[in-house]
Image 1 (tube, rainbow, N blue to C red):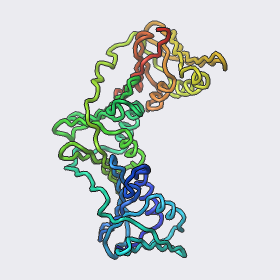
Image 2 (tube, rainbow, N blue to C red):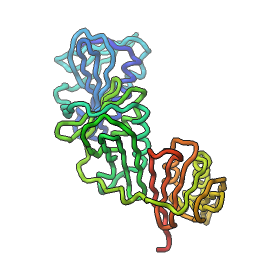
Image 3 (cartoon, rainbow, N blue to C red):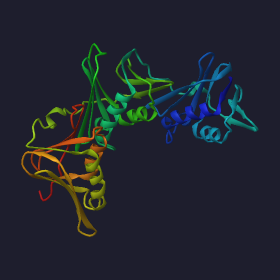
Length: 368
């Protein structure tokens, strides 16, 4: 294997794939990046931890084809120190060592035979193509509600429903629920998947402006997202996602429309005190006003009052301020609508004037 590549392109490709490289596995090969040089196709870099595979195609001048795996951290750190010039790679097949030359720098990096690298999960035909802005919104509005370290693995994923009329991404940790939707007419049949939140977060992190092709493996064991020079393949989570439709309130006694930015800023301000008091913030709604307050017996309290359009009776509800803020940060409209029924019932946050995002948040209750 022998090829030349620009340092900037190589550094960008490594940055894309190394987050998928395993750092704790007992298998040394999983700490490596696979480098595959093909004539006319440049170089493909691949990293995996067996749950997610990230590949990035990098333009290169390939003189001799071949493949090798090299330690991801060593290679990334080395490439970061190189001048922004041409980098020449040459593999010694007998010793499985790559000689790397750039400017006045020469290094020899020991690798592991690429044949020990895990085979990529198979992917079938592309199901649907989603534009970048829609994909970023669907992911950003859903992953905020996934659980971490849950006893139920399905709650660590996002329920992705691909159907003839559109797309639905749903997630819940038992305390809140996110439902993000988009219209699409590219599917002839329905597909329901549970995708790990980490995999979708990697898609959002690497996604620029390229449309995303979604591929599904023949046995529905994995899903692939392809965009630009990058492909991310993720194992799917096996199990039944909770039926979330009954959780979403179908009506509300009180509806409040308020500035999204004002309520976000108020949540941040109130969190200064509420974070030391079980993260509790009190939403108090009266005619024409919404008041958000936080109290801590030892450090003090603060209250933020803002103008609001209120329909319905006065109400006071306690929410986890971190959950409240997470939902508000996912709203992409100048105003937000808050729907409330009773202090013991969940509240609903929606972007005012749009129906593509629903955020259900359970109230905090004390003395029961």
